[in-house]
Image 1 (cartoon, one colour):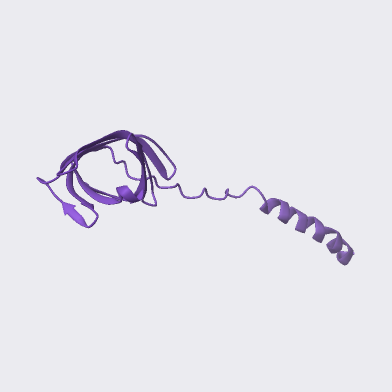
Image 2 (cartoon, rainbow, N blue to C red; image 1 turned 180 degrees about the vertical axis):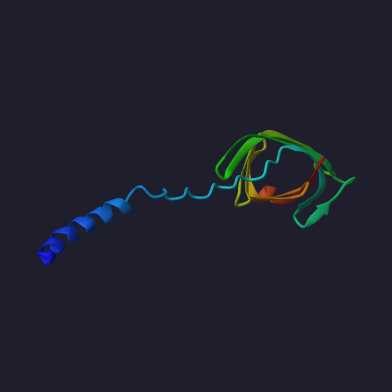
Length: 146
């Protein structure tokens, strides 16, 4: 009799344990939040401009760069930009438009002068923008936030 009762109870006990272990436990943790890129908003003064292997620093080249972040979502931030740089021989270069940055360090700007692609780094108050495309605009500019 005990064996027969045991055979009838074991499937019931196993089913109860399985049902009791499922679904009521803690939910899987959410994936970690994507870290947004730094907020680059501010006005920057030109520290150096390197193009075609020539580096110019103030007072030979002067300029300001104003960035205003307007949105940030996930790993991407966008905003508006205003640029004014005075360079010997070339003269005054001015541009207005938009920029997009990502946490991977990519940089994109679209302005009246055209589109520029590259990378950026921010170390404290120093912003470095390395333009890699288009070929005519390849340059590195270093800016210090006011």
